[in-house]
Length: 91
Image (tube, rainbow, N blue to C red; front, side, top):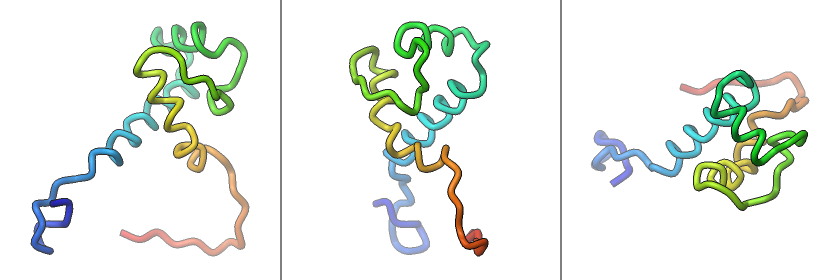
């Protein structure tokens, strides 16, 4: 079902990947747009002075719980990594 139509599938995307991507967008907003009302609210209720990438508590609203569950998946994209200088982008 999730295979591309050209490969005989139905072309249905895997919803988990989309969900993690959307949660990543929420994380981006939490880190970069502190003036948004919903970001202020989440920070006040759940974070206090802590950084969102260091949170381990999983108690709260369903949205907050989802963000916390995906933090480990999202941390990889929010950290600097040193490499050997060789990189490539595949399309």
